[in-house]
Image (cartoon, rainbow, N blue to C red; front, top):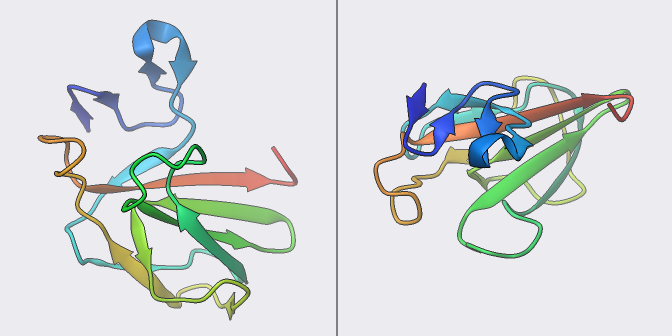
Length: 115
């Protein structure tokens, strides 16, 4: 889906072509359950590494060969916990306070063997 910030597909242009969208956005209602796509170990923190918007959270699942970063998810799991594929890991957050008008969504980034 596209909005005033751009499109949510992987590789979509951002900032007039200065950068690319490095994930895939999936429309989600606030409070909608989010499940782990892989088996792995949990880490959690703020959605943005620079600490802006600390209320927006992320859950990262690191498995044997894959790592999945899920942004805009309020975790229901603890750092260091091992989760199974399909296990509940949290709830989708609303983005309306920070990005008024943007569709609420979960941003998903996947890397396999570091790529």
